[in-house]
Image 1 (cartoon, rainbow, N blue to C red):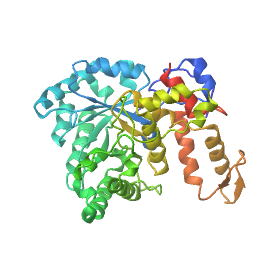
Image 2 (image 1 turned 45 degrees about the vertical axis):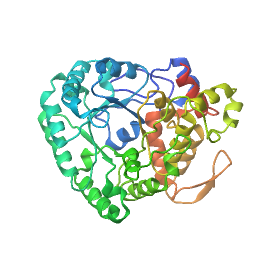
Image 3 (image 1 turned 120 degrees about the horizontal axis):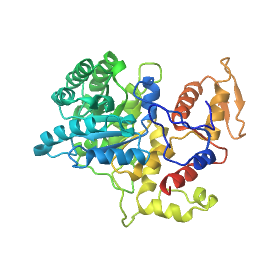
Image 4 (image 1 turned 90 degrees about the horizontal axis):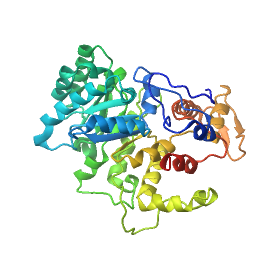
Length: 396
């Protein structure tokens, strides 16, 4: 992996909107470019924060262009939950028009997806596109299940053939069959078998925690993460167990949405430790994050990673910086990973940071994933923390 240079090439890359001086100060190894012709596993890790936007917005094309300039690298034009039933037709037309208008612009280098309601929606988007095929990366498939999923995946395959471009699918797992304990294992086994048939087509598996909560009439509070909602976190654990394995049978699993972004009165103490911000003279910045509910989001992102989940669905532009900042690989992580990958004969040795042991066999898969993530999110300079990254991204 190289650092120092940041020439623009085909595709996009994370943190490209920062000025060169800031990037050099933050990164030992700069993030490298990616596009939808990239290796599937690397592209899935590159998703990072995937921003959803209603497909009915009258200024949709301008919105996508603006977000791309702000550093967003993956977006979903949403025709499902974000759109009222009587506006779907308008949304379909607006989506096709938007993709066609984006063709040839810098925004077309983003990873752009359309979340449809039905398999028929995939066919209708594909049949209406002109130049916009160049801007389309694939489709998000809602309410995906062992029984409903095949029609979706076959529609994406047919659209790929029709348009002459490999299009990806991102199924969203959120059905009641998955949530209910007595049907979960059977459902997950069926989903796993179906996705295995279409492995080359599936970019990542997304978790729809809002619908899962709705099954029980739950809406989690802003003072809690999804990992505090036991009936949902049990589902997430089983999804990762079935579909997130690193033995060649699994997929990248992305984290559920964080719903909050406005000021409010807090019931509990903030979830963001003060010490890292005090060490970087950023106490006021920490207070700003807490007041905007981003402390809960940061906590949830850390728990996503701890539970085998990469990237996250976001519904507000202010969340993008938090997700991507915490996706960058630290100097310590990277050098531990390189150390682990330095030999295949097993054994254990102390980290160069002298604060942990690196075991070459059990930590090997972690190290491989860390180096791959580093290729798209970069490696920070020694001493640079997520506070520095987040400060640069929010205050640019």
